[in-house]
Length: 497
Image (tube, rainbow, N blue to C red):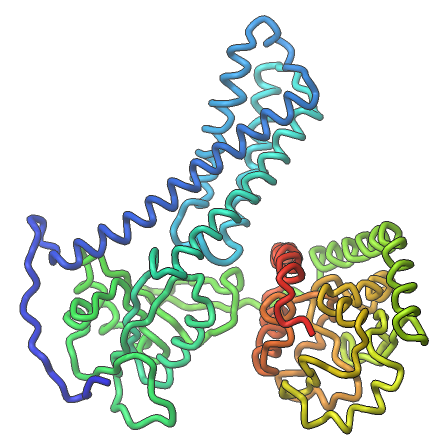
């Protein structure tokens, strides 16, 4: 680690013709190059998605709009050129190519949804204004298909970006500024999500640094010129953390110093695990006030969530009935005893209910818990053993594929659970005190952020953090995103035991 009293003299950086330091200019070029490449990939994917949707609609129905039968060339021009280009313009207008949104989080997909509604309105208005007789089914297939294809291709583009970032490409190098505890909190949060492409390369301590219990994983500096330090470390972003952001004069002067250098300035307040839609900046007399809205746990959106839960549960139980029968037969053959396992779990507002699951353990599993206590591989209120001797062979397969969870659709149908939410914990696992109790504000779910982020491989603290994030930042988009990620988690079988 660098010594804190090191005041190394940094020579003035060579200048380009426009006065920008040459090293910063090259970093800016490098960062702009990867972002332009990724934005270009999104544009190509979006164009292909809309053109493919138009082709699907016309080939499925085999018809064109009235007035175009004699000029199929013009109709093809509209379908494969004008419509895709118009969609790209609307996507751009909604900020879906903005680097603040692309590549991480759900905001990018929200912009795509908003752009799709705008396109529906535009196409409807143009059809009415030009008196074009469009097939509603054809238009519906084209517009819905375009949305679906855009989402799929953008998901693939994001995977390409994640792969590049996993190899050290398309990243931002961060210098963290603040007290060491504050910067370490930001460091821990950032490094939990390597897909964001944020790579901390150093800490500039604003207060005296004393020896920590754990050595910081990046060099720590103090008493240095921040802009010179950015040059030395090759950073392209400064993150001002916690209380260091409360000095408006210093922050403003730092922003002035960074003008023209190609270095971004971001402020990381102590508001971890709060999603963007709940945070708003409202300037008052030049003072930017950060407003944090209350979580939305009621209202029309919540009613819509409950309706979707029960409809999907009902359809799932009917469609999956043959699978239920096959699993029931396999369980009875593997180990005589009941097909289902029912246990008291804690639900919304602390009420208890009996969860439905396919039985995966031998009938004496509960009696053997005490003798296996030393083999527990988790902490907190959890009890997990990777190679649990209480699980019979068919049960291991059911757990690995999460098929043992399917009967919980019954709990969803009768309103005790939701498709997405915190995991329901056994009632006898202990008291739900402090922060843990907050997870009881919503119905527990069959799947959730816990399950798609590592399942049994997570520590109890990480599991609680993810559950609380869901409670505080719930939205229909987050539910859909979690359900989509569940498919991948089940296929990978990571942490399933």
